[in-house]
Length: 352
Image 1 (cartoon, one colour):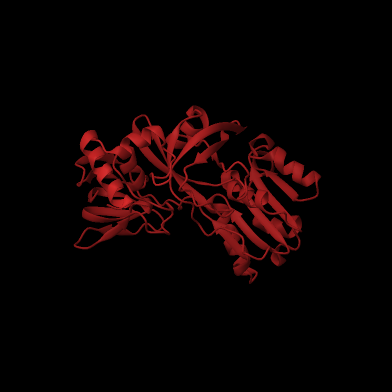
Image 2 (tube, helix red, strand yellow; image 1 turned 90 degrees about the horizontal axis):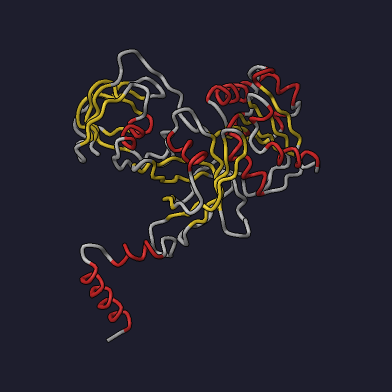
C-alpha cells in the first residue's frame, strides 16, 4: 500500500473517532495559522496613532500570499458574537522582515469593527483574512515625479507606498481637522526632515476645506506628476473634475472607501434573508451587506464599493435603491443586486 493510501486511511479513521467534529477542527485549535487552514491572522499588537486611530499588527497564516503596496485586505472579526467583515488598506511595507502585516484603522462613529479594533482588540485575538486585492498601486516602473493627495484615513494606502519605495521627487498634500489628527504625522515629518518628502498639511478646522484650485499654488507642477488620491468622496470628485478639465485625467488614480449616499424620504423597510430565515428592519441608508452582517447572516463581499461584484445576490421580492445613483431595482426572475451599494426601498427579500 502506498504512503498516500496509508495517510488517507489514517485520516478516515481519525474522522470516525472525532465525529461529529473533524480532525481539522482540532488542528484549528492547536495550529490555526498552519498551511492548508482557512486563512487567519493573529493580532500581535495594537499601536495608537491618534486619539481615534491605531495600527494593528497581524501575524498572517502560512497561506498568506503577500501584497502590493496600496492594496487592501478584508478581515473578519467577531464582535459581540457576530462575525463582521471590513476592508482596510495594508500599511506595512511588502518586505517587512518579521513577516507581519499591519492595517491602520480610524474609529468612526457607530463603527462596530473600527471601534473594536482601535479600542478593544487584544494581542492574541484570531481574525479571519482574505488575500489582499485592489488596483490602487504604483506601476512597475517608479514614476519620476509623484503627488499624493489624501484626507483623513485616506492616507493609509499611500503610507504603504511611502514605506515601500523611496521616491526621487514626491509631494503630499494631506487634509485633517487639526495637526493631532494627522495619522503617521511623526513619521511623515521624519521623511520631510530627511528630504524624502515635501508635505503640505491642510488643517480643515482652521484652514477650511481644501479648494482643489489651490493646487496651482501648493504644487505648481501638479499636472506633470503622476497622482494618487484617497479620501472622502467630495475631495475625489473635485480632483477628478480638476484633472479632467486640465486634460490630464489619466495621471490621476483614486481610491474610494465608500460610495456616495443618495437617500430619499420614506425608504427602508423589513428585510428578509430567506436562506437563513432572518428578518430585520433596515433604514434606507445602510447597505444591505451591512444589514445582513449585523443580523449574523453570512454575506460574501469584496471591495464594498460596487466594483468587484463579490457580493452579488438574487433579489427575490421587493425593491432596493442603488446608494450611488438613487436608481430603484424591483424584484423579478433572475434579478441580481450588489448588496454593498444597495439599501432597502421598502420590504424586500434577499436570497441569503
